[in-house]
Every structure is written in C-alpha cells, then in structure tokens.
Amino acid sequence: MGVAASCCGGALLQEGLVLDPLPMQGPELGFHADDIERPDMEQDSKQEVLENKDVIVQRVHIDGLGRTKEDCLTYEIADVFRAKNLIDVMKRAHEARQKLLRLGIFRQVEVVIDTSRGVDALPNGLDVTFDVSELRRMTGSYNTMVGNNEGCMVLGLKLPNVFGSAEKLTFQVSYGTKETSYGLSFFKPQPGHFERNFAVNLYKVAGQFPWSSLRETDRGVSTEFSFPLWKTNHTLKWEGVWRELGCLERTASFAVREESGHSLKSSLSHSMVIDTRNSAILPRSGALLKINQELAGYTGGDASFLKEDFEIQFNRRLFWDSVLSASLWGGCLLPIGDKPTCIADRFYLGGPTSVRGFSMYSIGPQSEGDYLGGEVYWAGAVHLYSPLPFRPGKGGFGDLFRTHFFLNAGNLCNLNYGDGPQAHLRKLAECIRWSYGAGIVLRLGNIARLELNYCIPMGVQSGDRICDGFQFGAGIRFL
Image (cartoon, rainbow, N blue to C red; front, side, top):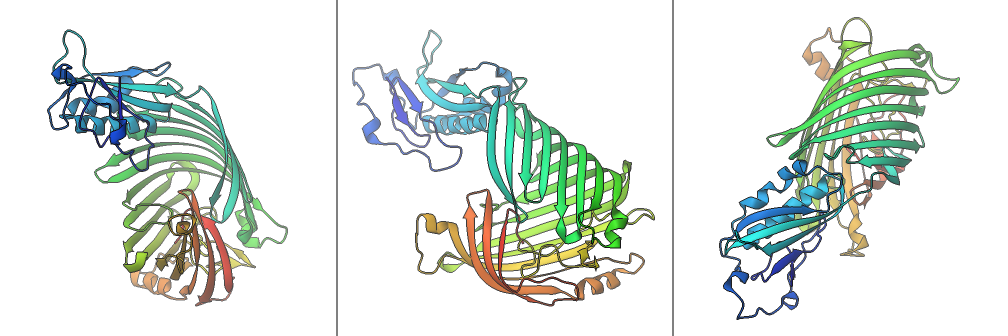
C-alpha cells in the first residue's frame, strides 16, 4: 500500500511513499488530497509519520543496477541520510534523483520512501529506495545544430557507462554548410563531483572561410580538466593540432597565399566562467563573465603567441516585461618571437552575431577583398528586449518571440607593440564601426536563437562590407 506524492508536500506517510519520476527541470508535481488513502486509526502509531516529526533515514537502496558500480553512486545519495523530517527526506531524495539522472547513465530513476522494517527498525525510521533503469550499452542520435550563422547535421554514437563509473565514449560526425568534422571523445567525471571531469578528444575538422578565401583542415588531440572553484567554473586544456591551410579560390590574395601550408600548434589554455543568467540563449536576468587565456609555443610546435579574450554581459528586467541587456567583448593576440601571427589564430569581427549591419567577418585588415583578421579587437552592444506588440500567443508560442532595439559598435585592427599604451588606445578608438536598428528574436528552446533585424550601419570604413537593411542571423553566441 503506497502513497504517491511530490518532494514538496505530504502530511502523512502510511506503509510507503512513492515519488513519481520528476523532470530534471520544470515544475514539481503537486500533492493532491485525492491521492491519499484514508489511514486506519487502529494501525500501529509507527505507520504515522508527521511532516514536522523527526525521522531517521536508516537505509538507502539502489535497485536495478547492472554494469554500474554501486560505490560511485554513494556520493550522489549521501545527503539523504542527513534529512531530519519527512519533508526534508522528500526534498533530498528528489535532489539525489536529479544527481543520478545528471550522470547520463540512467534512462529512468524512481524513488520510494517507506517505513523501516525488521528487528532493528526504529519507530521513526525510514528506508529510501532508488529504482533505476540503465541506458543501453550503445545509443545513437541525430540532430541539427546552429552556430555562427551556420547550420549542420550531427550524427552520434555513444557508449555510456563504459567501465561502470559514469564514463562516456562518444563518436560524432558533423556535416555543415561551411564545416565538416569527425570526433572521438572520452569523458570521465569524478565520483561525487560531476562538475570535476576529465576529457580526451581526437578530431578532424575541415572548414571553409569565404570571407578570407581560405580553407583549413585541422587534425588534433586535446585533453581538458574542468572543475568548479567557489562561484566560478574553470577549464584547463592542452591541445596539439596539425593545421593545413590552403586557398579556397584561385582569386585569393597574395597575403592569403602566403599563409598557405602546414603548421603545428601546441598550446595550453585556461578559461574561467561566472554565469548567473537564467538562460544562455535569451536571458532576462543575471550576468556573465568569461575570460580565456591561451599560450602556444612553449610545449612544441611552430606557432608562438599569447592570446587573451573576455566576454561580459549584464541583463536587467524593466517595466512591462522588458529587459535591458549590455555586452562587451574584447581580445588581444601577442606574437612571441619574430614570427608573425597566423591568420587562423587572429580575431574576426562583423556579422549578424557580432556587429550587426556588417557582413560576416568583414571588418578590419584586408587584402584584395580577403579579410585577414586582427590582433586586437573590442565590441559592445546595448539591447532593449520587449514582448511582441499586443502580445499575440501570450502564454504559449508567442512567448518565444521578442522584439529588440539595439546599438552596437566595435573595432578590429593590428597594433605596433613598440608603441606605448596610449597609442594603442588611440588606434582602438579610431575608425569605430557602429550600427543601430530593430528586429525580432526567436528563441529555439535552449539550443539557439534566430534574429531578423533591420540594420543601419554607421562608421563604415574603406574595405568594409555592409548589410544595409534586413539581416538574418542564427547562432548561440550573440553580442
């Protein structure tokens, strides 16, 4: 005899209490009086556990394990033993269920809470059982992805829980309009600390960059270690990549032809992220700080440079469900030694995902119509998002759309590092490209977003390519 309930309600426990499966994210299930069976007043008082009465979790069971090692799950369910009352037990059990699902090795996890039985059972003792269903040894997937104004189809083959401790081996093929890639990766989390994980990647990426009349094929290996520290998330990475550059067209400029050939890059990088936004695609509140550093040349290879870049974003709710958003990007590439930087390592700016009103990556140094990228850049934007006029489809499909008014600006150039800081600042402040306009934003879940904007570019310099009027953009990361 059991009682169905959510993790946030329930005044009485009789015989057993079952937690229905809850989604990883979303509203918690309600607790309905109709679901409660009337208690028998003649039953032993042990069967009645009031929500404000102290209880003790005596045992936690995990049923349904096959190839999963039980010791690696101990850390995920340990907090259940610290519960002090029934409501706390249900809350901690739901949190433990979410942790188990987060491992990516179970198809389903159900929770059952029951009174303790046996000779050593306490009057206020409880037993918690997690009934799990493991994923198959091999799973496949296919989907589409959107990024940097490009779409692609992705086919994947995944082997979850390879050695029984939540490891994952993944093979993935991606075919896109400008890029094709193949990758094999191994992922290993630390037991009890899923955010601390180690990954090894083997990959091949072939891409086309028509704004530079360039094609690039990368074959590489990388290892990375991710871990949280206070309120920040860090990633340490080593990457070794063999790069093959060539001309995409016969009309490629001489500057691009000079860059053609093979090179080997070996680099160490570090990234730090603080993200309090409620959504990464179209946030309405919170802030983001992201800092990346990359050092190449000290672990081998023929590319030597120090690269720094950052991203800052603030979002604040205003009146009438409107949101004010401000973003700032910046970066600097410093060559080490006498060898100049490679066109594949430089920054690029412009397009519907950065400085709107300009064509894709069409700002900055160029030669014979081919854009060569720059060694330093900055870009900033201010947006005012608001609901659609008259709120069509409110509470449903219409809430995926937002109107926005924007003002963005930026600059990309090369610096003479023999000059002082003041000369650098003056050069970054010269020839600023900027634009303003309005448009409609469509949020595609937590995957990507689409924009259709009417742009008015300003501050156009010689050699820049503009998009005066309507401009469409699709991607994940927008200025």
